[in-house]
Amino acid sequence: MKFEAPVTLLFDNDGTLLSSMDSVLSCWTRWAREYGISAEDFAAVELHGRPAADIVGDLLPAELIPEALARIERLEVEDVPRGGVVPLPGTAELLASLPEGSWAVVTSATRELAEARLRAVGIEAPLVIAADDITRGKPDPEPYLLAAEKLGADPARCVVFEDAPAGLEAGRSAGMRTVGLATTHRREQLRADVVVEHLGSVTAQAGASGVTVVAAD
Image (cartoon, rainbow, N blue to C red; front, side, top):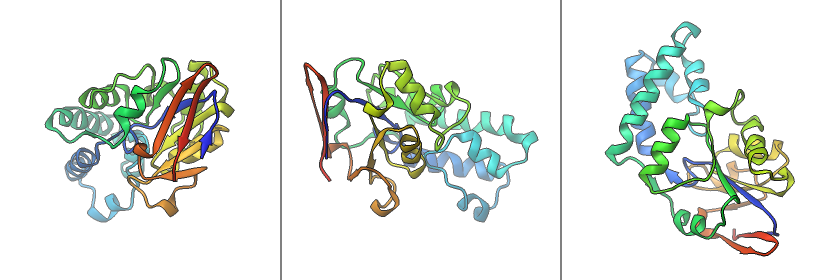
């Protein structure tokens, strides 16, 4: 599928630009043990593509949420230097082809955690919209609409790159076009304009009228 210029590219982080799956599973499993959460209850909660506050809220009573949220944040930030974060195929090449002001990272993680993971794989994002910046996380469209506003972009001219159903729903609800990445979910779970294996299947070309994107399914 070809997205004609001008377009603005909005990328989820984990599962899209990079993979922190090993780190996420390790940290959240340790956290669940510390808070006495049963394996059955833990397995029933979707971890990927959701703000930590929502996950913690699904598992613990309200009075424990602030402390528990701070604990998982610290576990994940401290785990980044241990090597559990790696770039996904095609990320470096695609980002290197994009002009300034044409893209942003839109993540459900906090800013501290998101920026730590981006630094770990050598990505310098011009704009990061993180959990700290919003009141409603994905699948609500607020994060993507805020990114478009910050970049001065028409939502209808934005393309969202996401690996999680909640993120794709957020992009659709924002009135944006969507590219699903089959890095953490099966293709049939991803409702998008086009689904590709990873960013290695996406190319971008900058011209006088803006950026044109081709996603080959």
